[in-house]
Length: 295
Length: 100
Image (cartoon, each protein chain N blue to C red):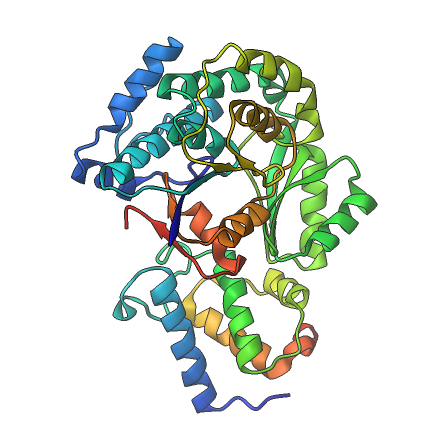
Protein backbone atom coordinates (compact mmCIF):
# COMPACT_ATOMS: atom_id res chain seq x y z
CA UNK A 1 0.00 0.00 0.00
CA UNK A 2 1.63 3.26 -1.12
CA UNK A 3 0.90 6.74 0.10
CA UNK A 4 1.34 10.19 -1.39
CA UNK A 5 1.22 13.72 -0.08
CA UNK A 6 -0.25 16.14 -2.60
CA UNK A 7 0.12 19.87 -2.12
CA UNK A 8 -2.43 22.47 -3.25
CA UNK A 9 -1.54 25.81 -4.85
CA UNK A 10 -3.59 28.68 -3.52
CA UNK A 11 -6.08 29.07 -0.71
CA UNK A 12 -9.54 29.71 -2.11
CA UNK A 13 -11.40 30.15 1.19
CA UNK A 14 -10.62 31.39 4.70
CA UNK A 15 -9.38 28.21 6.31
CA UNK A 16 -11.15 27.94 9.69
CA UNK A 17 -11.13 24.18 10.11
CA UNK A 18 -7.48 24.04 9.17
CA UNK A 19 -6.51 26.53 11.89
CA UNK A 20 -8.49 24.52 14.42
CA UNK A 21 -6.70 21.38 13.28
CA UNK A 22 -3.32 23.08 13.71
CA UNK A 23 -4.34 24.26 17.21
CA UNK A 24 -5.39 20.74 18.17
CA UNK A 25 -1.97 19.50 17.10
CA UNK A 26 -0.18 22.29 18.97
CA UNK A 27 1.22 23.74 15.77
CA UNK A 28 1.35 27.52 15.53
CA UNK A 29 0.97 28.66 11.92
CA UNK A 30 2.35 32.06 12.84
CA UNK A 31 5.69 30.49 13.72
CA UNK A 32 5.96 29.53 10.06
CA UNK A 33 4.75 32.95 8.95
CA UNK A 34 7.31 34.73 11.16
CA UNK A 35 10.05 32.54 9.76
CA UNK A 36 9.02 33.52 6.22
CA UNK A 37 8.94 37.21 7.19
CA UNK A 38 12.41 37.03 8.69
CA UNK A 39 13.81 35.10 5.73
CA UNK A 40 12.40 37.48 3.14
CA UNK A 41 12.72 40.63 5.23
CA UNK A 42 9.04 41.44 4.74
CA UNK A 43 6.26 41.90 7.26
CA UNK A 44 3.65 39.22 6.74
CA UNK A 45 0.69 39.83 9.07
CA UNK A 46 -0.17 37.20 11.68
CA UNK A 47 -2.87 34.85 10.49
CA UNK A 48 -6.01 34.29 12.55
CA UNK A 49 -9.64 33.29 12.09
CA UNK A 50 -10.64 36.77 10.93
CA UNK A 51 -7.62 37.58 8.79
CA UNK A 52 -8.44 39.26 5.51
CA UNK A 53 -5.07 40.71 4.56
CA UNK A 54 -4.19 37.65 2.51
CA UNK A 55 -7.23 37.62 0.23
CA UNK A 56 -6.19 40.28 -2.25
CA UNK A 57 -2.45 39.84 -2.23
CA UNK A 58 -1.16 37.18 -4.60
CA UNK A 59 2.27 36.95 -2.97
CA UNK A 60 0.88 36.74 0.57
CA UNK A 61 -1.64 34.11 -0.56
CA UNK A 62 1.14 31.98 -2.06
CA UNK A 63 3.29 32.26 1.04
CA UNK A 64 0.34 31.47 3.30
CA UNK A 65 -0.50 28.38 1.25
CA UNK A 66 3.15 27.32 1.54
CA UNK A 67 3.08 27.85 5.33
CA UNK A 68 -0.09 25.78 5.71
CA UNK A 69 1.27 22.98 3.54
CA UNK A 70 4.58 22.82 5.39
CA UNK A 71 2.80 22.86 8.77
CA UNK A 72 0.49 20.03 7.68
CA UNK A 73 3.47 18.13 6.33
CA UNK A 74 5.09 18.29 9.78
CA UNK A 75 1.94 17.04 11.49
CA UNK A 76 1.52 14.10 9.12
CA UNK A 77 5.14 13.05 9.37
CA UNK A 78 5.08 13.43 13.16
CA UNK A 79 2.15 11.00 13.18
CA UNK A 80 4.37 8.49 11.41
CA UNK A 81 2.74 8.79 7.98
CA UNK A 82 5.49 8.38 5.41
CA UNK A 83 4.71 9.18 1.78
CA UNK A 84 6.14 7.11 -1.06
CA UNK A 85 5.50 9.93 -3.55
CA UNK A 86 4.85 13.65 -3.57
CA UNK A 87 3.18 15.95 -6.06
CA UNK A 88 2.47 19.66 -5.99
CA UNK A 89 -0.39 21.28 -7.85
CA UNK A 90 1.05 24.39 -9.53
CA UNK A 91 2.62 26.48 -6.75
CA UNK A 92 2.30 23.40 -4.53
CA UNK A 93 5.62 22.33 -6.05
CA UNK A 94 7.49 24.45 -3.49
CA UNK A 95 5.95 22.63 -0.52
CA UNK A 96 6.59 19.30 -2.23
CA UNK A 97 10.32 19.96 -2.72
CA UNK A 98 10.47 21.07 0.92
CA UNK A 99 8.66 17.89 1.96
CA UNK A 100 11.19 15.89 -0.08
CA UNK A 101 13.93 17.63 1.94
CA UNK A 102 15.37 18.90 -1.30
CA UNK A 103 15.35 22.49 -0.02
CA UNK A 104 15.03 24.07 3.43
CA UNK A 105 11.80 25.76 4.54
CA UNK A 106 13.49 29.14 4.17
CA UNK A 107 14.79 28.42 0.67
CA UNK A 108 11.32 27.25 -0.37
CA UNK A 109 10.01 30.66 0.68
CA UNK A 110 12.87 32.38 -1.17
CA UNK A 111 11.99 30.50 -4.35
CA UNK A 112 8.32 31.53 -4.13
CA UNK A 113 9.27 35.13 -3.43
CA UNK A 114 11.79 35.31 -6.24
CA UNK A 115 9.46 33.69 -8.78
CA UNK A 116 6.75 36.17 -7.81
CA UNK A 117 9.08 39.18 -8.04
CA UNK A 118 10.39 37.97 -11.38
CA UNK A 119 6.95 37.95 -12.98
CA UNK A 120 5.67 40.97 -11.07
CA UNK A 121 5.90 43.34 -14.05
CA UNK A 122 3.48 41.04 -15.86
CA UNK A 123 1.26 40.82 -12.77
CA UNK A 124 1.09 44.55 -12.19
CA UNK A 125 -0.35 45.32 -15.62
CA UNK A 126 -3.50 43.51 -14.45
CA UNK A 127 -4.02 42.59 -18.09
CA UNK A 128 -3.53 38.88 -17.56
CA UNK A 129 -5.34 36.20 -15.68
CA UNK A 130 -6.52 32.64 -15.43
CA UNK A 131 -9.91 30.96 -15.42
CA UNK A 132 -11.57 27.58 -14.95
CA UNK A 133 -14.10 26.03 -17.31
CA UNK A 134 -16.24 23.19 -15.98
CA UNK A 135 -18.33 20.87 -18.12
CA UNK A 136 -16.72 21.12 -21.55
CA UNK A 137 -14.21 18.70 -23.04
CA UNK A 138 -10.66 19.63 -23.99
CA UNK A 139 -11.65 19.41 -27.66
CA UNK A 140 -14.61 21.74 -27.07
CA UNK A 141 -12.46 24.37 -25.35
CA UNK A 142 -9.63 23.96 -27.82
CA UNK A 143 -12.10 24.52 -30.66
CA UNK A 144 -13.43 27.68 -29.02
CA UNK A 145 -9.91 29.01 -28.47
CA UNK A 146 -8.95 28.48 -32.11
CA UNK A 147 -12.14 30.13 -33.28
CA UNK A 148 -12.37 33.12 -30.94
CA UNK A 149 -9.25 33.67 -28.83
CA UNK A 150 -6.21 32.00 -30.42
CA UNK A 151 -3.76 33.56 -27.96
CA UNK A 152 -5.32 31.81 -24.96
CA UNK A 153 -3.98 28.47 -23.78
CA UNK A 154 -5.34 25.52 -21.84
CA UNK A 155 -2.59 25.44 -19.23
CA UNK A 156 -3.89 22.65 -17.01
CA UNK A 157 -6.28 19.73 -17.13
CA UNK A 158 -7.70 19.18 -13.65
CA UNK A 159 -9.84 16.29 -14.84
CA UNK A 160 -11.83 15.46 -17.97
CA UNK A 161 -14.50 18.04 -17.09
CA UNK A 162 -12.37 20.80 -15.53
CA UNK A 163 -9.84 22.86 -17.44
CA UNK A 164 -7.75 25.90 -16.61
CA UNK A 165 -6.94 28.56 -19.18
CA UNK A 166 -4.53 31.50 -19.03
CA UNK A 167 -3.76 34.59 -21.05
CA UNK A 168 -5.07 38.11 -21.49
CA UNK A 169 -8.09 38.95 -19.34
CA UNK A 170 -9.98 40.59 -22.19
CA UNK A 171 -9.71 37.36 -24.17
CA UNK A 172 -10.54 35.22 -21.17
CA UNK A 173 -13.80 37.09 -20.75
CA UNK A 174 -14.67 36.47 -24.40
CA UNK A 175 -13.86 32.78 -24.14
CA UNK A 176 -15.82 32.31 -20.91
CA UNK A 177 -18.90 33.77 -22.54
CA UNK A 178 -18.46 31.46 -25.52
CA UNK A 179 -17.94 28.51 -23.18
CA UNK A 180 -21.24 29.20 -21.44
CA UNK A 181 -23.00 29.52 -24.80
CA UNK A 182 -21.44 26.20 -25.79
CA UNK A 183 -22.87 24.47 -22.71
CA UNK A 184 -20.26 24.75 -19.94
CA UNK A 185 -21.81 24.05 -16.56
CA UNK A 186 -19.90 26.92 -15.03
CA UNK A 187 -16.89 29.16 -15.56
CA UNK A 188 -14.88 31.22 -13.10
CA UNK A 189 -12.08 33.74 -13.37
CA UNK A 190 -9.36 32.96 -10.83
CA UNK A 191 -8.24 35.73 -8.48
CA UNK A 192 -4.78 36.01 -9.98
CA UNK A 193 -3.21 38.57 -12.27
CA UNK A 194 -0.48 36.29 -13.54
CA UNK A 195 -1.03 33.85 -16.43
CA UNK A 196 0.95 31.07 -14.75
CA UNK A 197 2.07 28.15 -16.93
CA UNK A 198 1.39 30.07 -20.13
CA UNK A 199 3.67 31.24 -22.96
CA UNK A 200 3.84 34.69 -21.33
CA UNK A 201 6.00 33.16 -18.57
CA UNK A 202 8.54 31.55 -20.90
CA UNK A 203 10.83 34.58 -20.91
CA UNK A 204 11.37 34.12 -17.16
CA UNK A 205 12.72 30.58 -17.50
CA UNK A 206 16.38 31.57 -17.75
CA UNK A 207 16.47 34.18 -14.95
CA UNK A 208 14.52 31.85 -12.66
CA UNK A 209 16.89 29.03 -13.49
CA UNK A 210 19.83 31.30 -12.62
CA UNK A 211 18.27 32.12 -9.25
CA UNK A 212 17.56 28.44 -8.57
CA UNK A 213 21.27 27.74 -9.07
CA UNK A 214 22.01 30.11 -6.18
CA UNK A 215 19.91 27.96 -3.81
CA UNK A 216 21.29 24.95 -1.98
CA UNK A 217 19.55 21.75 -3.09
CA UNK A 218 19.70 18.19 -1.78
CA UNK A 219 18.69 15.06 -3.64
CA UNK A 220 14.95 14.55 -3.02
CA UNK A 221 14.48 11.94 -0.29
CA UNK A 222 11.01 11.17 -1.60
CA UNK A 223 10.28 11.01 -5.34
CA UNK A 224 8.15 13.82 -6.74
CA UNK A 225 5.86 13.39 -9.75
CA UNK A 226 6.35 16.16 -12.28
CA UNK A 227 3.15 18.01 -13.16
CA UNK A 228 4.88 19.15 -16.36
CA UNK A 229 5.71 15.79 -17.97
CA UNK A 230 4.84 13.31 -15.20
CA UNK A 231 8.39 12.03 -14.84
CA UNK A 232 9.51 10.79 -11.45
CA UNK A 233 11.88 13.43 -10.09
CA UNK A 234 14.67 11.89 -8.07
CA UNK A 235 17.78 14.03 -8.66
CA UNK A 236 18.85 17.60 -7.97
CA UNK A 237 19.00 18.62 -11.67
CA UNK A 238 15.52 17.15 -12.18
CA UNK A 239 14.18 19.03 -9.16
CA UNK A 240 15.67 22.29 -10.42
CA UNK A 241 14.34 21.76 -13.94
CA UNK A 242 10.89 20.95 -12.59
CA UNK A 243 10.72 24.28 -10.76
CA UNK A 244 11.41 26.14 -13.99
CA UNK A 245 8.95 24.01 -15.97
CA UNK A 246 6.32 24.38 -13.27
CA UNK A 247 6.46 28.16 -13.51
CA UNK A 248 6.78 28.58 -17.24
CA UNK A 249 5.14 25.61 -18.96
CA UNK A 250 1.76 23.91 -19.12
CA UNK A 251 1.00 21.38 -16.43
CA UNK A 252 -1.40 18.44 -16.31
CA UNK A 253 -2.79 17.51 -12.91
CA UNK A 254 -5.07 14.81 -14.31
CA UNK A 255 -2.12 12.92 -15.78
CA UNK A 256 -0.08 13.48 -12.62
CA UNK A 257 -2.80 11.85 -10.52
CA UNK A 258 -2.94 8.92 -12.94
CA UNK A 259 0.81 8.36 -12.57
CA UNK A 260 0.36 8.22 -8.79
CA UNK A 261 -2.45 5.70 -9.24
CA UNK A 262 -0.38 3.64 -11.71
CA UNK A 263 2.38 3.54 -9.10
CA UNK A 264 -0.05 1.84 -6.71
CA UNK A 265 -0.71 4.86 -4.52
CA UNK A 266 -4.01 4.10 -2.81
CA UNK A 267 -3.88 6.68 -0.04
CA UNK A 268 -3.38 10.36 -0.81
CA UNK A 269 -3.30 13.19 1.70
CA UNK A 270 -4.22 16.71 0.64
CA UNK A 271 -1.42 18.43 2.47
CA UNK A 272 -2.61 22.01 2.80
CA UNK A 273 -5.51 24.31 3.34
CA UNK A 274 -8.80 23.78 1.53
CA UNK A 275 -10.22 20.81 -0.32
CA UNK A 276 -9.54 21.91 -3.88
CA UNK A 277 -7.55 18.81 -4.81
CA UNK A 278 -10.21 16.53 -3.38
CA UNK A 279 -12.85 18.39 -5.36
CA UNK A 280 -11.04 18.10 -8.68
CA UNK A 281 -10.22 14.43 -8.06
CA UNK A 282 -13.92 13.73 -8.55
CA UNK A 283 -13.52 12.55 -12.14
CA UNK A 284 -10.08 10.98 -11.76
CA UNK A 285 -10.93 7.31 -11.58
CA UNK A 286 -8.86 4.75 -9.72
CA UNK A 287 -8.61 2.63 -6.64
CA UNK A 288 -7.46 5.32 -4.23
CA UNK A 289 -8.70 7.43 -1.37
CA UNK A 290 -7.95 11.14 -1.10
CA UNK A 291 -8.06 12.46 2.43
CA UNK A 292 -8.34 16.00 3.67
CA UNK A 293 -6.36 15.63 6.84
CA UNK A 294 -8.16 18.15 9.03
CA UNK A 295 -11.68 16.66 8.71
CA UNK B 1 -40.19 10.54 -22.66
CA UNK B 2 -40.07 8.86 -19.25
CA UNK B 3 -43.04 8.95 -16.93
CA UNK B 4 -42.22 10.56 -13.59
CA UNK B 5 -44.06 8.88 -10.73
CA UNK B 6 -44.09 9.55 -7.00
CA UNK B 7 -41.75 6.58 -6.70
CA UNK B 8 -39.29 8.16 -9.17
CA UNK B 9 -39.34 11.41 -7.23
CA UNK B 10 -38.66 9.61 -3.94
CA UNK B 11 -35.89 7.61 -5.56
CA UNK B 12 -34.23 10.72 -7.01
CA UNK B 13 -34.57 12.57 -3.73
CA UNK B 14 -32.97 9.72 -1.83
CA UNK B 15 -30.05 9.51 -4.25
CA UNK B 16 -29.47 13.28 -4.15
CA UNK B 17 -29.60 13.49 -0.36
CA UNK B 18 -27.36 10.44 0.14
CA UNK B 19 -24.91 11.82 -2.40
CA UNK B 20 -24.59 15.23 -0.73
CA UNK B 21 -24.45 13.76 2.77
CA UNK B 22 -21.51 11.59 1.78
CA UNK B 23 -19.69 14.07 -0.43
CA UNK B 24 -20.13 17.06 1.88
CA UNK B 25 -19.49 15.01 5.02
CA UNK B 26 -22.71 16.07 6.75
CA UNK B 27 -25.42 14.03 8.48
CA UNK B 28 -28.40 13.12 6.31
CA UNK B 29 -30.82 14.86 8.70
CA UNK B 30 -28.88 18.11 8.26
CA UNK B 31 -29.92 18.28 4.60
CA UNK B 32 -33.35 19.37 3.43
CA UNK B 33 -34.85 20.48 0.14
CA UNK B 34 -34.28 24.06 1.30
CA UNK B 35 -30.53 23.55 1.84
CA UNK B 36 -28.45 25.87 -0.30
CA UNK B 37 -25.98 23.72 -2.22
CA UNK B 38 -23.10 26.16 -2.05
CA UNK B 39 -23.53 28.16 1.15
CA UNK B 40 -25.00 25.37 3.35
CA UNK B 41 -23.26 22.31 1.95
CA UNK B 42 -20.07 23.66 0.34
CA UNK B 43 -21.11 21.92 -2.86
CA UNK B 44 -19.66 22.67 -6.27
CA UNK B 45 -20.28 22.24 -9.97
CA UNK B 46 -18.23 19.04 -10.21
CA UNK B 47 -20.58 17.45 -7.68
CA UNK B 48 -23.45 18.49 -9.93
CA UNK B 49 -21.70 16.82 -12.88
CA UNK B 50 -21.05 13.64 -10.94
CA UNK B 51 -24.68 13.46 -9.90
CA UNK B 52 -25.73 13.81 -13.53
CA UNK B 53 -23.43 10.91 -14.44
CA UNK B 54 -25.05 8.81 -11.70
CA UNK B 55 -28.53 9.49 -13.09
CA UNK B 56 -27.39 8.97 -16.69
CA UNK B 57 -26.23 5.48 -15.78
CA UNK B 58 -29.15 4.61 -13.52
CA UNK B 59 -31.85 5.67 -15.97
CA UNK B 60 -29.87 5.02 -19.15
CA UNK B 61 -30.37 8.62 -20.24
CA UNK B 62 -29.56 9.99 -23.66
CA UNK B 63 -28.42 13.50 -22.84
CA UNK B 64 -25.24 15.46 -23.41
CA UNK B 65 -23.60 17.41 -20.61
CA UNK B 66 -23.54 20.44 -22.89
CA UNK B 67 -27.32 20.28 -23.20
CA UNK B 68 -27.64 20.29 -19.42
CA UNK B 69 -25.17 23.17 -19.24
CA UNK B 70 -27.26 25.23 -21.64
CA UNK B 71 -30.41 24.46 -19.66
CA UNK B 72 -28.75 25.19 -16.32
CA UNK B 73 -27.57 28.63 -17.46
CA UNK B 74 -31.17 29.65 -18.08
CA UNK B 75 -32.55 27.75 -15.10
CA UNK B 76 -29.92 27.91 -12.34
CA UNK B 77 -30.43 25.82 -9.23
CA UNK B 78 -29.50 26.94 -5.75
CA UNK B 79 -31.21 24.50 -3.42
CA UNK B 80 -31.38 20.73 -3.10
CA UNK B 81 -35.10 20.88 -3.91
CA UNK B 82 -34.44 22.77 -7.15
CA UNK B 83 -31.72 20.28 -8.02
CA UNK B 84 -34.11 17.34 -7.51
CA UNK B 85 -36.66 19.07 -9.76
CA UNK B 86 -34.02 19.58 -12.45
CA UNK B 87 -32.89 15.96 -12.27
CA UNK B 88 -36.50 14.86 -12.71
CA UNK B 89 -36.85 17.09 -15.78
CA UNK B 90 -33.63 15.61 -17.18
CA UNK B 91 -34.94 12.08 -16.64
CA UNK B 92 -38.28 13.00 -18.18
CA UNK B 93 -37.10 14.97 -21.21
CA UNK B 94 -33.44 13.97 -21.77
CA UNK B 95 -32.00 15.88 -24.77
CA UNK B 96 -35.36 17.58 -25.38
CA UNK B 97 -35.05 19.51 -22.14
CA UNK B 98 -33.98 22.62 -24.07
CA UNK B 99 -37.36 22.68 -25.80
CA UNK B 100 -39.15 23.30 -22.51
